[in-house]
Length: 444
Image (tube, rainbow, N blue to C red; front, side, top):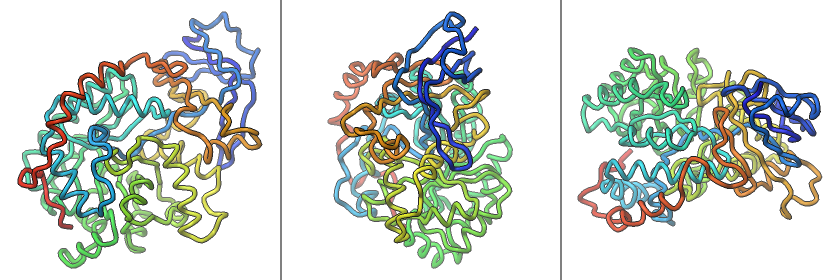
């Protein structure tokens, strides 16, 4: 007997970067995994405890946000029309000086609420007070890979604290929560700190989530100061001996790409195109990265540099950005964009065997999308409409780990009114900007 049967859905299926739509199919879920996918009429609805009619809707894997700072949603709209230096020094690192642990709990809930509405079922989040973020994920019913952010200036003791968090929460919420260590970046962590972080990750069987080579200017600054690129620094400090998520890597050199392509340990790049466009940071050549076999996943980054936690936007900007960057409109095709958003993001997230695809045996992280809106009509190509037309509001229902967490836009795990009511009284304090109190200085 199935615990949940999704009936009469159309299913997005991706195989070897080819996309096709299976029309009028049922998906059976037992526990937290997909147990059967059959043409409608094959599975008896009476054999399921719960039946969800998805007639006319498209079923696809839940999106995976491979790099975010979810609680930053508290400061949405507060770092506008500034360059990267000012964004760090005049805004975010002043604003974050106001942060209290409970703020992270409510900010995380706010971001999770938005991500659920956009069809994001998993997030790799890099922030502070992560036990509060973990509690929010437990409540939301989503999946998360959590890392406690660390600056080298705050001392080596942070590494033990971060490891304690990682060991306590790894596997929590029935396996929905996983953990990873989070040194911030080579320009905020010296070699000794990076070596110690890498050693601790190996000791506890964890990985590392780190910002690296966010801009070409950072790479040039590292060459002047250290005689190495940021990626060479990570390599020499042993970071790549553990599974690693690299946020951005826009300043990676050809030699850096050779290092990444030759790694035997799982390593991937989180690509956050809306942040890059907004802060004029440039773009990675994903065509080149993928030709080298380097995994690339989609990320939103934080809402202060992105404004939304919406991977439909990121997928669209990724496809169009690569066409513009390479000067070739045939680059980054629709099936490739969908593959990056699903299977490849699952690879960067570290769960390629379980996520990113709707097939028997995979974890049941499924979203149902309505393509009946005016902006989809006439629906000449489902896959083109997914990449170039779909909005977050088209996501009707979300299932994570086999359990519905949103049905027909109604949240089942989070209370929007409660979240808003707890955030609003905090905002006067959270909006203060005092330069003397900033948590770090950006000086790559």
